[in-house]
Length: 374
Image 1 (cartoon, rainbow, N blue to C red):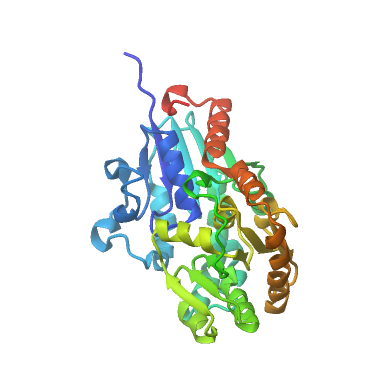
Image 2 (cartoon, rainbow, N blue to C red):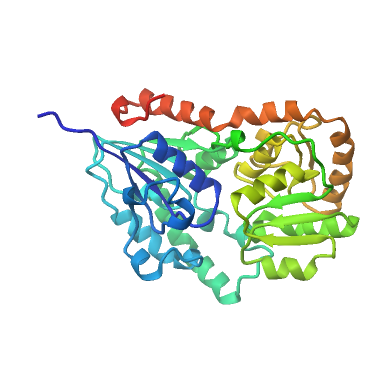
């Protein structure tokens, strides 16, 4: 009797809304028979997108549930994913935020890793902590274990057969840190979920986890300086600090549901990217709604924003430079062709991602029977 081919998808954690989770969901849809392996799985958020019976979370899920404090368990993740045995799978596809490269696979299996960035806690810790509200003990602990995490991360990065980077920026990090090559396939953007809008309620918008390296402080300071309305969507450890320095024109909505975020995309004046994004799905979603983007000229934004056509850049990571760019985008919005902005966003749409991933898997010998029909 012929052996039935098996597949597995692995992702670090399904907690909160983030680009890594969106990629993992699409990988699970591309491989409909795959088991999905992770640490925490938030069924209330993801159960409608991935059938919970497909998901194999780690044992701590039964004890803690999908805790919002999942990042505090950092020392446990390397051990869990190193021990995760996927040797029954002929095809393993990972969506790697930090740890999934380490899973155990058979020598004759195909292991493909879609990399969002080499482990930020190991390689970009100073940027991660700069300006953050992390207590001194946490900072000291993070710096103490950094060399161990770096060695482990380089070891784990040798395990996949094929690496895929979510942007040219990440491909360069992979080359520099892991000394490996990677193909670039941009993440899926749900362009079809976001209607083209001509409405402009005048407010600026930023939606991100409130971490120090995202530089939401620049957006808050610039909007306060200009007296411009700014809506901040998202939560995180810097929320209290940001609220304390914000002026009366800045509103913090915390975490919102998807329909609310889509509505905000349609009503905003422009979307802000004040820090360096690995790729940045939210600004492309804003462009899908026909909106201009103001972005720091670095990282993924340089691959998604077309200056003078879909947005403007600023070069100095300072509130004054962002404030100047906000005033420059006002003139662009007046002459913007929303349909052309949306057409540009469509080049990053989910079907594009799915088609490129399918082609890559087949090119490297994946069994076509494991893939969803085109």
